[in-house]
Amino acid sequence: MTAESAVTTCFRHPKVESHVRCTRCDRYICPSCMREAAVGHQCVECVKEGTQSVRQARTAFGGRISAVPMVTYVLIGLNVLAYLAELARPSVEDRFDMLGTVPAGYLPEGVAHGEWYRLLTGAFLHLTPGEGTFGITHILFNMLALWNIGRVVEAQLGRARYLALYLLSALGGSVLVLLIAPETRTVGASGAVFGLGAAYWVMSRRLGYDMRAVNRYMGGLLVWLVISAWATSWQGHLGGLLAGGAVTLAYAYAPRDARRTLVQAGACVALLALLLVLAWVKVSGLTGGAAG
Image (cartoon, rainbow, N blue to C red; front, side, top):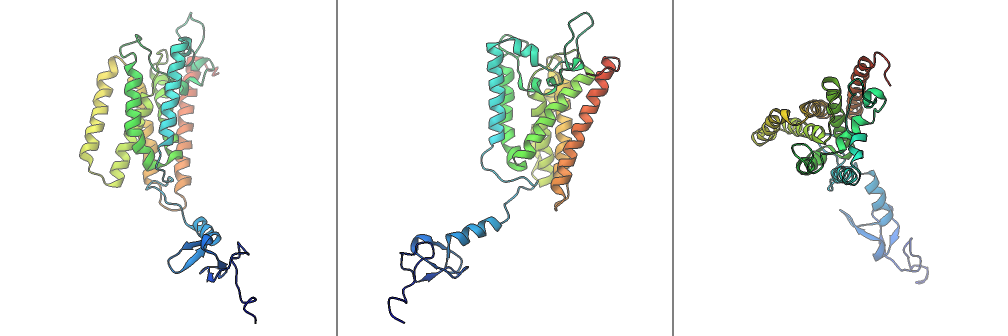
């Protein structure tokens, strides 16, 4: 064998002489293709293949770990955009707020008259300046609460579970308003925020946190629920609290095996079905059996 024929080259760069083999595939690799390994070096292809086979880290509740609370950012953005729309066109609030029905003698509108979207759209609207008791502080307080607690809950649940929790909490608040006070117009993300508060408490219990600070936070929420009853929709707050607690209980106590995601998703679907059935039954009662 001649010296020239004994020269070995990188399998990815045939013109580059190499004398180091990948410890995984045993092919020659040049310095630009080398990656440090526990023993020796591996080629970039073997490293990529190994990375794909590594199981992605999950939170204690099964969600994918993410350093950026993107869903919380998006939800805050949607609430702010809806608020700007209200300021530009005041009719937006009347068109999309949560309303079950109207007294006899008025033009028919509301969920009972086929406007089912109000069950969710009302949760993204807020009182405008000079309107009601709170005015602009309505959205400020809600967004501050969403920013503070939403990031914590999203980090624990992962994006998909967190979004499902938020929307079901908002829906739960609207359905309770429909059941108890169908002629009351309501707006605000408070129901969803109360649902996040319930989630924070359930998760903290499940993870064994020191509950003193958590209980103080929840105590404040419950006190606000009572005090604000005279000026806000306590039905929306309570409905969100109950829905959020129910969803998070399913998240927290689902079996920690291959069935976990299925059980968690099934619980969310079951709650969604229950809320829609309750809404349909109420609407049927309001319209004499002709649900829209």
